[in-house]
Amino acid sequence: MNLTLKIWRQKDPKTAGQLVTYQAKDVTADMSFLEMLDVLNEELIRRGEDPVAFDHDCREGICGSCGFLINGVPHGPRRGTTVCQLHMRSFKDGDSLTLEPWRARAFPVIKDLVVDRSAFDRIIQAGGYISAPTGSAPDAAAILVTKDSAETAMDAAACIGCGACVAACPNASAMLFTAAKVTHLNVLPQGQPERDARTLNMVAAMASENFGSCTNHAECEAACPKDIPLEFIAGLNRDLLRSVFRPRREPLAVRGTPQSPAHEDT
Ligand code: SF4
Ligand code: FES
Image (cartoon, rainbow, N blue to C red; front, side, top):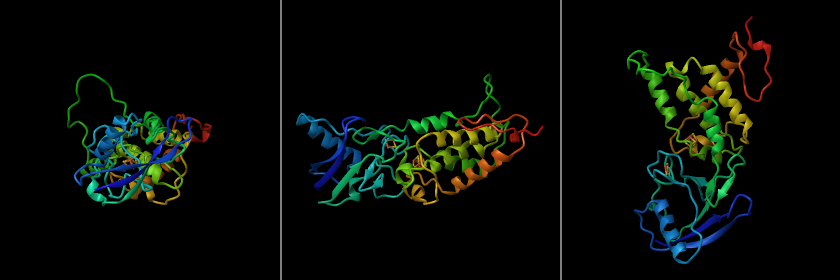
């Protein structure tokens, strides 16, 4: 099949970008979308032109590197599918496809279809871990995990941090990502000692980036290639309320927010 591609070309973060039209010829149905772009790039290199920059790594839908808008839809038309797992059989001969990078202030464009998603890394750094003493390996059965907790944690851990939820949200909110990452640890027994601090710190880190607020549009859930459910956002909101109001002896240090003695139960 032959396709018309309108691709966002932007030399660097400071230069204005524009859509440039290319013809993709002899595309086969079995090619992945990224393989189709590889072929286009080989042609551009042959012509002495700059190849189209796009992020990718595993090409198996597990690393979260890839992602851009295809005709305005994050990761393209197939639900629950990353763009690296999308195949050209999802399109037909003569289609015209517009490829753009994620559009969000928190994800500035680096080049062409590549954006800077380090804001996600900073949210993870704020609390996406548990503290465990080092030393000999603990007995595997020392901490029992219920089946429900294990399954919820696994569902939340499926988030690959691709950023499609932010790109899909009219507010460019990062709530679905943050909710998945908080839930992943907050539902496990190993995550309990730092549960309140994790919730507060990760939400504060999210708020300090250029993301918008969640107003329950649910576009994030529809765009997520890993089917992360909205109910994790409800869970995060419940955990946040509990963390803010739970009486405690030490005031919690929340980055970027004024501390209140109301958090102490003296
Ligand atoms: S919640 Fe879904 S869309 Fe958002 S970063 Fe995680 S995997 Fe990607
Ligand atoms: S390249 Fe790893 S998820 Fe697409």
